[in-house]
Length: 123
Image (cartoon, rainbow, N blue to C red; front, side, top):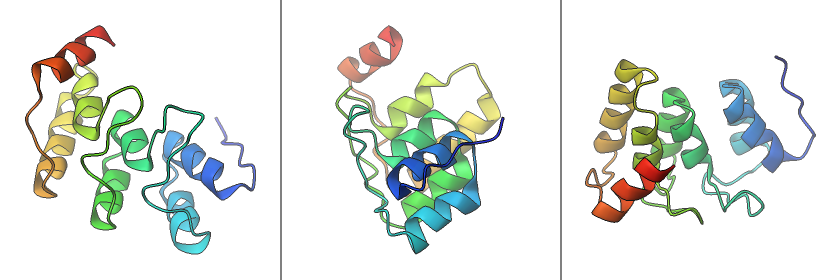
């Protein structure tokens, strides 16, 4: 499937993450000025880091973490990057484990509260 870019940098960033288009993600941030902590208000205030975590985009995740993404940010659905990573359980365990190591490397709190665990199970 070919991504459809709109020319709007913020929307193009989300599309790039969805389609695993690393070069376009870099362009949106470094050339077109989208903040690594941008919030898509019409999408539960999702951030680039959460979008990358939920889609197992480890290379993108590392770039965002290296460049100041808020590793503890929680969207309107009460999810953070760690929760999105755990939510992928059963898809690709090696990829998930590598992503967990990245989150830990950059200082993400690796502890889930009982409420966070409940939200993951419920989703």
